[in-house]
Length: 126
Image (tube, rainbow, N blue to C red; front, side, top):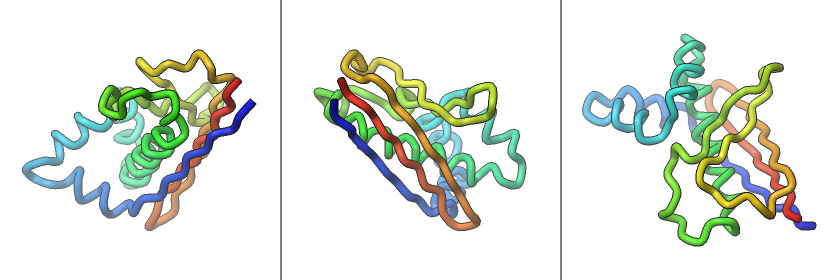
């Protein structure tokens, strides 16, 4: 077995500026986030940018962890990596169109504070 990891950290303000941009904000959200992710983040009201940033970091961290599974990095999109929550509210990854046959398990951890959001993805390969 082999363990693959990916970690990413991002400034929440960068994501907020991208979302609030008058020209590109809507396009940014629609290119990066799934409808489930948008619905979840928008439900967080004043803390929505922290949740958007955490999901952005999760997508980056997931890409790093699964990069060996991908033959062409341009074959996946931002929306192919989706962060959803289980019944207990714990975040997990939903990966679309990515060959995961050699992957035994994948784990996601998210955290954020006032200025930063961080994500860690750990993947266990057979």
